Image 1 (cartoon, one colour):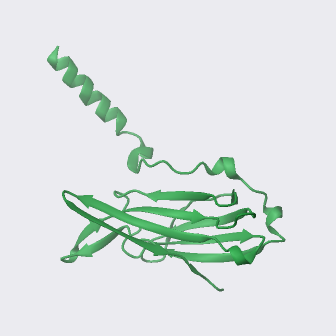
Image 2 (tube, one colour; image 1 turned 30 degrees about the vertical axis):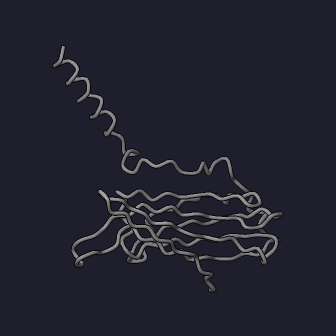
Length: 170
């Protein structure tokens, strides 16, 4: 009986880790429920924001890193207008686009926040990772806020810090 239980646990652990989606198992926003028409963006003020992210930081020397979980917040700070985000691209330290989060524009209701989570095990971005967001809103006085919180804990040591997006002019 004991052998059967051990075999069952082993089988379940193999099956549970076999999927590619388990590589970085983090719940993300359901973008499909938030699709927006591209024609609705034509009359709006458009902007672009750069947000730095850190998948890891260095400590002691350049060959030792501290891996981080990043929570990326996309915040609509308007109390009356809907925010539309048409691009959310994740780039690595070399500037290469490694992940595209949107295939269609999505909307955020007034004062709503959407998040993207970069798991601690996902170190693809590196120490110089970043996001580029393209967005549109009716009233440019209420430009969205893009922020990231990076955190990690190990034993009794904890580390956390934030970054904030900056406008990009092209």
